[in-house]
Image (cartoon, rainbow, N blue to C red; front, side, top):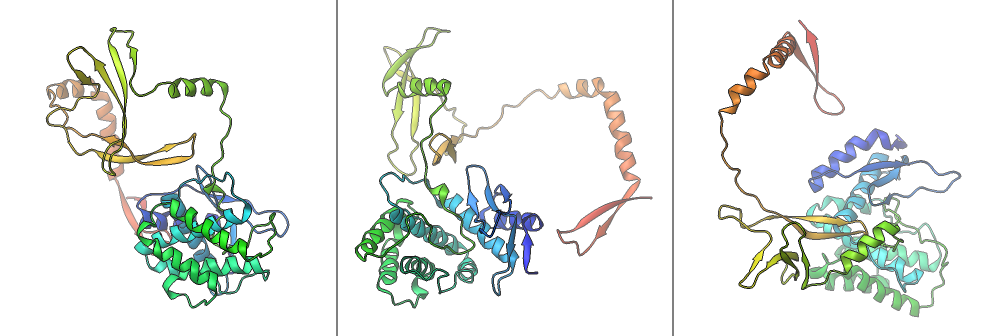
Length: 365
């Protein structure tokens, strides 16, 4: 098959991503562009968006191209954080994006080594654009994907690989890509390679446009702005009075002192003798809460380990209510028995060799 429709592989991609990352991602198609312009995958705040149709790439089937694109985008979802584009020129942004692509792919194929071969098959050694800057960007991109396997003897490619490998112990920190990218941009700037500021260097076909990496400040609506200013006005140590009971409460910031510590805010009651925490734990409550990230839509940032869920045993209740509930709902239970009885009058037939797993059909006896 020379090309593949996104709708034909949507279910497969969902299953593939769940198998790798343990949870699903929202996938959506992008309508075909007018003319001959290629549609690139992209990521926004809600979806991973892939072209509505993709062609075969040499020996790589269109279905594998979709898998490569979906997994690369999911790696960004798992490991990338928005970056500040302020004061960066086009060359610097391109280099930071290039290193960030390499960083998230390294983190992904460290867990799933077969992904590197999948991506390399779609990243040929020769750039489709012969201009000097575009060619160097292409070779850097492939070199950072190959790393120790690279045989490219270009000075800048070797330097990029060396910088990347020197920071392997810190590669899970998103700031690493910015630091390496800016250093490479400075060195390439000294080479005086001409580049078209208005164009984007060619990327491997499976990679997205990287626009999601750069956050932008958007003006807030007036009602949101007023509430936001009120929140920002509350500083650590500020006090306010609860209208219902007239209690004095203190709003205290709790700093994060280590990676395992809980950061946030605490509300305490102010008394002459002691400060009582607003949230109290019982003796039988789990002392090691489960932690989850939280998405801050205003800044476009996901805070790791920001929320803590404390589990505790439910209190035992009175079981005498059950007979009364059954007696009050006898007509409903009677109808349910009839429905269940009707289902039992049928039997299931297993359909084998189905495209999307086993299927069952109901047959009347």
